[in-house]
Length: 273
Image (cartoon, rainbow, N blue to C red; front, side, top):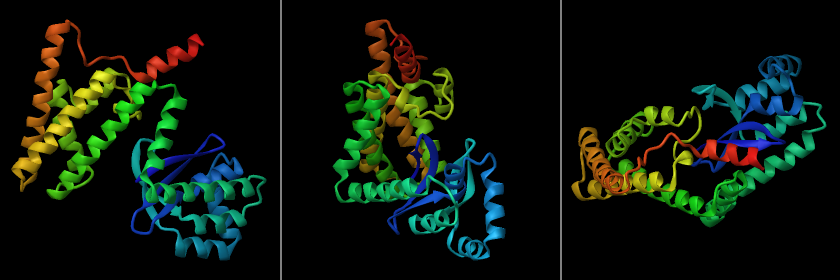
């Protein structure tokens, strides 16, 4: 599970390693946070040359992991909490101690969420509410996350590969219920890196959930053995939700799939305030 953590409003890319139950943090991002360097990559090279012991430690203990960079997945030098503590010790910065406390807090929160998943849900709800989403929408969004998890668990059980195959099936479902591919849908709402579901209306979310929940149930019943069969089922699940969309639109005379995004609505709300 990859994520973005914030320290003093600065982004630190991170990746949760399930088997080790450890967060891995981008070393370059940590350097940038601590030093405010314009070129943290160059800064890292210099301190590795200057401090041979640190350079050897990083080379031995910090792996290259895949993280999002400028919209693309790239290999990035990363370290777990212990590794980052070691790096922090070698960088003179007034932010060192606050960063250590933040690092410990991030690790503790994730372990708490594993022990008690409700804490993770509560934290997610709090994050959405702080961004200005309504409580009704947040409840709907949290339900959509549960529905999506059921679907991906089913895909995993059927041998569907994470990454590209998940994306292809998701695209199939989305096209079948909305009439648009995921890319076309995001373009309609003028989204780039933003999450599409985070910018859906309540009704859009409901139909997307219906499409994914239906796909899950059909897959459980038919037990597909190939990716091609899973793709057919994805289309079937999406089509059922798509027919529901058309019926609602026929009765209301309004289009459900809309260029309006939550991002735009929240920006407008903030400007008015």
